[in-house]
Length: 592
Image (cartoon, one colour):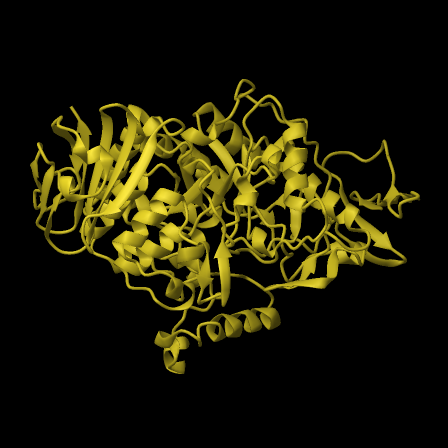
């Protein structure tokens, strides 16, 4: 170990242990010291478990004292799953500052909006000065361009004091392409048998896998203990390949549960397989994670409202029948054959509470993986968008919002990087090549118009424009979100997710009805028209909740003047209810 101090560098030899690792304890190494490692006379190399890389991922590591920060939120116990409303944000583009401090300044806005948790896209340090997040290589070090480790602690502390949980997106399926030094220290980090879209898989089940599993487990515990984050979103767990008897996700979740007993800590997977095992409790043979991203809702909505049909969207009809089925079940694919996969997909979710399914209209993947970073509200009429927002925020599943969608932000969210020139050129070429299979990009000239990930302007274009929120149509969309989130927080039927019942059924090929029931006669009804004008008589829908003789009281419509700058009022006959839409929209009603 080479410690660098001005004028007095020092070398500290490490001692070998029987398991092949090396160790050392040195009283003269202090917080603020920079250090490197030399291996077999090679190097120096930064620490793969460095807590801070002040000069970039290729520079020396910094000694940090994680216990020195004066926490103010000692009594914080977290947010339970049933109260979770997630707001996903990218630190670098959420505010003009692009820093942890910039996010901290916007916490009052987020509290006022009504969300209960912010989810930070990956912050593990990466090569260059900007990145959309999934090229992290220094997995224990907050990205220095966002701020210092204590800047991140200040953000988490302030969020807790404001009543907000903080979730962190972590990537355990691959390392980024530049600056990952783990394999310099050991040849066993990567698998010789498993592969991912990003190259060799992580070795979780081969020779010396125990040490690799420990590295990633300690990373999870690092964020949960040293930064007191309230949970982790595990990126692309379908690409974490482990054929051992005790799957890594099960072990990781078990270790997290055992290490924290005094507050709610959530473990959420992003997984495209629709595997009930992931969120089934261990006592019933599952891995015990709290929730999973359930993308089928998003895909049905995109197919129905925007007409997406390429790639995995080909598996979805976008019919109101299939959308209603997805809402009732949590996901659509429960073992049916997938044309896109060429194999069956999914498993039976019927034994799982719907709050364990995280659904969205937008997220970083579904926007950032589009060639031009278009958001849903860029491609559908705002009347349709308002109807879909109502459907999302009254559903029994856990909702996730992506930064800016609550005011229908004009900005895209693009894929962007800042790699060294040779690697950057390959990234740009690869980005454009991956869209060749989409019919709209069959023309090479159109592919050339896809924004260059390496250009600073691509990142700049993704940065939210906050002044928009004061102007129409953005202000009215934000008012709708605030009111729906207030309703979600205060309505007894919506709050009764554990004991309540949910049903959903098509009313036509353009409309559907969702009911939420908390007890006899206590029912919330959501009537949604997604195309054109139309009349919906809820009594015609095969749903037990609509058989009541009690009149229905409207709680809100998406054409109420606060939510629609030029409203086209929705006519409601409360005895039916019968709802007449002049254009797409939604109505939320409650039994009187």
